[in-house]
Image 1 (tube, rainbow, N blue to C red):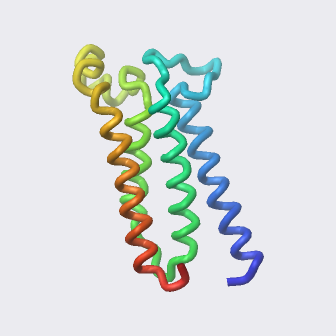
Image 2: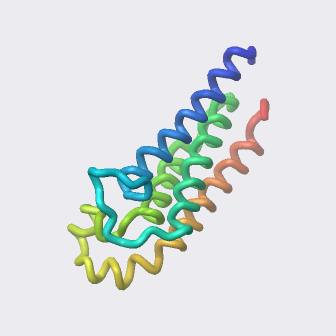
Image 3: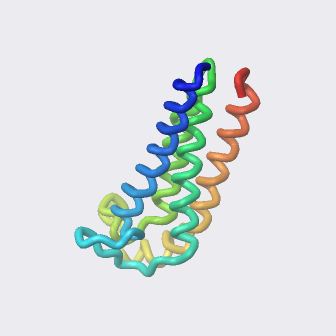
Length: 138
């Protein structure tokens, strides 16, 4: 791969990581903004899972650019979705609120959010390890 192509891949990965961080940080209220008010207190774990999700998404995009036969897009989407559920406000999620009551979400779902964050990190670590093991250029 030439230097310009590699630089483009690195810039794309950085852009994806920053985009994930800014978009999901904003829509979950971890990045304070006037459009969205978070109804559950922010925790250090929320910021950790936001950062980890963005970093792993960036690493996946970069590593995917090196692969001859890219794979794992569905697992990456699952990792990001699980990460968003881990650091998002459970009673602010309209989909979850439509399925369950706010009290059920706070009672049963909120305590599971750290486990979802660990699951998201596990998905990405496994995916990146698998991709690396099956990549000829890595």
